[in-house]
Structure formats: C-alpha cells, structure tokens
Length: 293
Image (cartoon, rainbow, N blue to C red; front, side, top):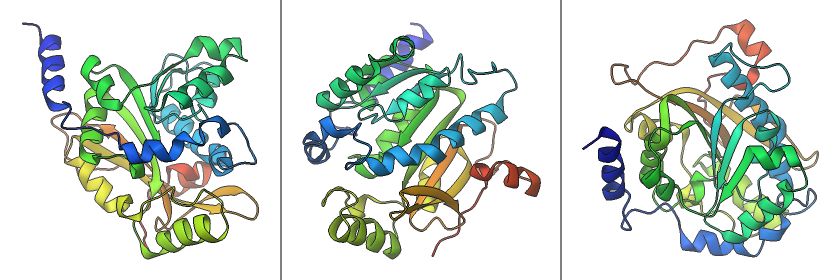
C-alpha cells in the first residue's frame, strides 16, 4: 500500500457524509443571487471593492515568501484553490496575476455564472477551472495538491469549521499558505455587520449573515494552530459604505484578514514572522495586529 493511497483512504474516512462543510441553509440563501455576482453596483459591490485590498494582500504575501517570480505574471506557477468562489470575483484577478486557479462552490448556479464570465477572456479560460463541489470532496481526491488556499468571506457560512480547516490542511502542500477574510464575533460586528449593513442600509441582503457563526481572530488562530497551521499575520479591515471602499485598520473587531501556513512537524505553533516598521509602512497588508474593541 502506497503512502498516497493511505492518505486518500484516511481522508475518505475523515471527511465522510457525517462531516460536511456545506450548510444547506446557506446555499439556499445565495441561490437567488447567483446571477448577480458581476453587477458591481448590486448586492456584491462590497466584494468587488474588497479586491482592492485582498488581492494585493495575497499577492504581496506570496511574493515575500519567494523571490522566484515573473515580471508581469508574479503568481505564475502557483496553484490556488479558491473555496466558495461564487461567481469568480477573486478567482479572476488571481488568474490575471498568472496563478493556476481552481474555484469551487457547492452551488451549481454560481459555477455557471463564473464559467460564463471567464469565457469572455481566453487567457483566463486557460488558467481557471471551476467545479461545483464541496471542500471535503476535493480533500477526498487531492492530497498536498495546492500551494495556496483562499477562503474569502466563506468561513462564516460553513457548517463545520474544524472540518473545513482539516480539509484545507489535507489539500495544501507543505508550507502552503491559507488566506482567510471574515467577520469577527463582537458586539460591534453585530451592530455594523448585521443591523446597519443588512437591516438599515441594505448593503447586503437581509439574512446574509448569522452572528453565531462569526469567529474572533483569537478563536480562529487557536483552531488553526491546533490543526497544524502557523498564523503569520492578522489585519483589521474596514468598509466605508459611503465611498464603497475598504481600508486596513488596526482593530480586528469588525472584519479581518488572516494569513497562515501549513506548518512543519517540528515547528512550534507560537511563532509569527516579525515585521519591521519599514516593512509595515511599505506593505500595510502584512501588519500583524490582533486588537479588538
């Protein structure tokens, strides 16, 4: 019996039907909006503008980890799994940076929208493939396949977060990177993320979020590190509904972005990469903050 066969067999047992990351209620919520992903003035406009900071965050972090990159195509040769890709809002800019992207989403209508949109660009059509499936299905068939996983605005919608993280560990290559953006679980995030954003201003549809599924960066870090990851950076994010733009802030009490790496067995879970003041000024997205309000 080969090691690869053993890993695949173990994955099938671990990520069986009793452990699923897909919440049917969440899928039903997004069903009605599947055709609206590329309406930049519609319900997903905050995600369009989030690309202005989340794409550089991913790009710059990966470039800092390796000096081997091509000018004009900096992510060439990097295999990225975009979990909960929706209509491809993040998959496409990562593909334009040269990455080979696999976007997955449990909702077939989302995948159809993503496929249709990428077909307008022949270069993207070659670099991006989409699949309507769950993360655990990928974990059953793939072991240490991807260099990077991105899960942007996803973890607050999954049914089982620990299974989700275990699956990420399963499919990442050694020292691979995991990027997460999500909402913190604080009183402020409830007021601004649900009461104001959903019920008062209608920035996102009412009922999009369940505050009980939000998670603080401290809780997420503990969960990641107990599952074999090293958290390297945590950065606060803020959305301005009047300008429609995102910015980096010190506080992680509303939204935050996190970068973690699949650790080596001998590494300790308490270490983070130090960042000098000069580096922080040059790359604010790499600032390592965990301030809460």
